[in-house]
Image (cartoon, rainbow, N blue to C red; front, side, top):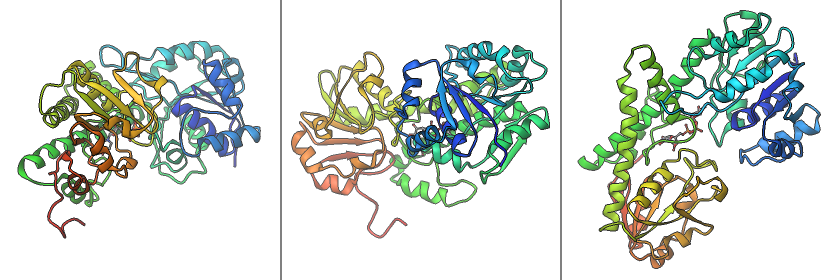
Length: 438
Ligand code: UDX
């Protein structure tokens, strides 16, 4: 297998996963990050990212001498392919903030080896790859778009077993060199131009968000007409043209990617005089969903929220990650606190130091403590272990046994049997008639 000397800039979820996985495929990889403490820890084989298999591959790569970390971009001077894996957060106008990408490019520009290929792996607005090429201004260095599709909590598996590999390049040879990095992976390779690759990434994430918003709307309708969203969604998902993923209702979708990507796509449309009403509505529906959740919590408490204790189960933006960035759970918590509620929260993975400054939730390390004297317990993240809690014990601790299950993860029959008043999303307090389901 031909090896490529790879440079990776940025050791976050995407960069670190990319670095360790490319090393595991046999490429020599040097990964840089501006965080000296993180680099030192990584060189000792330690990562705070709790991604399955990441730590093992990191240790293997270091031990095999195929992987190293540093802070000096000059170390990338002999790399044949350099991948930019930097954050592109949402800027104030809803667009993508390319500050980190520009800063890295400006530091790197003159250092790149003759004939190197620079790759945008970060999600960047359409046209960015070409604009970076112009900013770099090196006729001998091609800039290629190669977006990732990694889900947090599954980054290594998604990297090594991708649904597709996407390469957007003007020059075939530069595209070939990027595609060659992944030659051992069994996945369809889409070869296109940079603008199509950039747009395809945004389009995929925005479609997922739209799907989730659609299901949240159907969940509300289900409640009103006496249907059960789980059965509705399962039926839809069995149609190959729809597929079962992203059909779970919840408190609204969040995380570091979907919200900023949908906003960036709406912004991109505006930039060329195009309104994208489906996407605007996708965003608006997400706000509506959060309000619905707040209404349910208000109904569960049964009175004003001021001074009332509410227990929160789950703070991360989804299960299987410690990430709380743009978490729907924290958005709901913020609004509850604004209304005067006193909040206690438990999460199996979230770390206190990752919570935003002035976070109104008192983080506890025992799920039963969130029930203590609570007027309502609210499940905000779909951690499966919440289903297995001792709910009769939770009921005994609570001031009133009222639960709002915004992820439909609890056993509603068991809970109502244990004396809880149960409110889910798109479903009644009791399961449909016995014998139904599939
Ligand atoms: C997403 C994309 O899936 C991934 O391809 C891309 O590379 C990065 O962004 P991630 O941010 O890790 O990945 O989260 P994802 O699993 O997509 O979930 C996003 C949000 O949607 C979460 O808040 C999740 O709870 C919510 N969601 C997901 C639902 O509300 N319902 C669902 O059925 C699925």
